[in-house]
Image: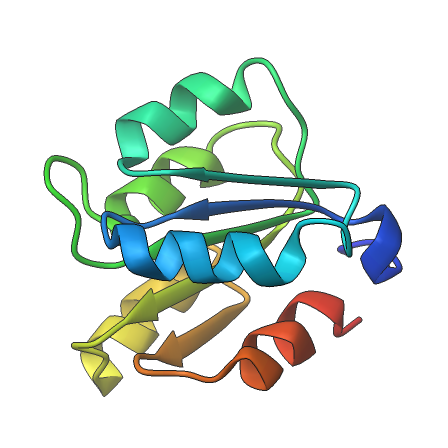
Length: 124
């Protein structure tokens, strides 16, 4: 069970190689959450997760190197407890089904608006 955390106490990690999206989310969440960090690859995220704890992890499906599903599959075998959200411009039912098998709590197709993502990260 994922603990409910108020937005101002939330530690949020975003993994996406779209720098504009990361900057946009950073602009919105910085100052509203306890910690916001963005990285450009799943491999970089795994390194960050060895040093820091996050309440919510948002990962894009299509990334260079390890894709988002593989990343969440790796996390499923770890002791990391966080809400997991998979985002993708290529979301379909097959990806959704595989996502839930590897422990993803929510999937969100791109493009999305800030209200959709805020709703998912603050949902208990």
